[in-house]
Structure formats: C-alpha cells, structure tokens
Length: 140
Image 1 (tube, rainbow, N blue to C red):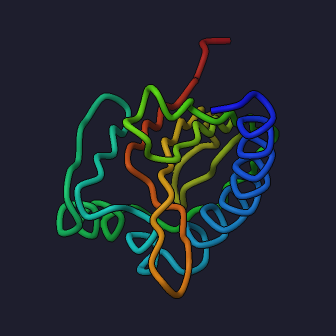
Image 2 (cartoon, one colour):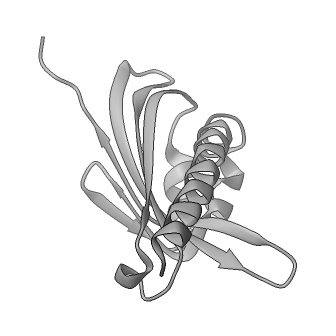
Image 3 (cartoon, helix red, strand yellow):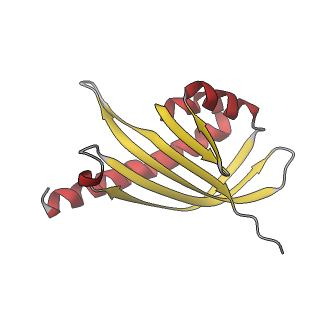
C-alpha cells in the first residue's frame, strides 16, 4: 500500500472512530439493548479482567448492569496497517473518561476497541471485534 493510501485510510478511520465513540456511549447510556448490534457475533469484551464472548453472553452482561452516565474526556485512534490484519481494515480506538453507574460511586475508566470494517453491497459499517474495559480507581 502506498504511503498516501495509508494516510487517506487513516483519516477515514479516525473520522469513523469519532462517530463510533459518540454512538457507543450514547447507546450504552440511553439504548443499552441496542448495544450488541455494534459488536461482531464473535466479539469478546474483557470487563475488568473478565472475558465475555458472543452475542448472548454480551446481552446478559449488559442487561445486568445498572443505568449509566458515561463522560468521555479524550479518545485516540489509529489505523492498524492491513499487513497486520490480513487485509481487513481495522482501527484501534482508545477512550478515557468517567462513568457513574446507578447506586455506585463514579469511576475513571479506559476502554480499548478494535473495530473492523464490514462492507456489503449496500453499505459499510464498523463493528467491534475486541473490547477491553478497565476501571482506574486510585486510593487517595
């Protein structure tokens, strides 16, 4: 792949990542039952060290969580070069912020997503292939 093609793909992926971050956390807070539609069928979520794989397990996990209010303070993204992903367009998205689950104290968190582009004749959509979420609470 030529350097300019990678730059173009990287710019497109980062714009998609920004849209994804907004969609993901709004869906998590307001329409959680729709959240699994953003994941590939074979996706794995690692939540504070606990792996959850497959659509049914993800649905059960998200259903058991109390209502939430996420606030993303920053995010970063970068394309993963297609040589590393066997030609699959992939982007790494890293987010940081805070979340308050109903009945719990506010937590700081970091979340890493690997998104892959899925293209059909009618559209292209980024789906979560891997998701790693971790609380960061330091003793005061």
